[in-house]
Length: 88
Image (cartoon, rainbow, N blue to C red):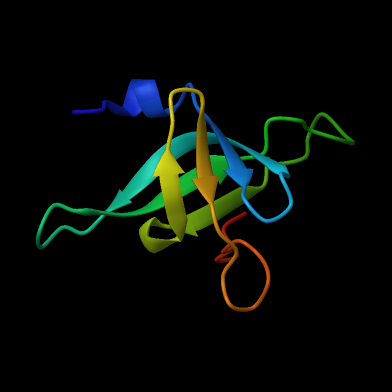
């Protein structure tokens, strides 16, 4: 079993390009069956003003290719980018 704190230490990387997306901040869980449906990633490198809110990206669970010892590899969605559900 892997805990949330262990997942938060792993960097999320886009498999096709090697782009580093950030680290897991939270999980989305289906209340009906208790399964994880998505990872919530916070962009750690804030650019710009101190008052800017960090950008959150939601990565669907089915985008995960593998969870390794140091990184989590994900694949792009069909539209060519990781999920961003407009959470700001």
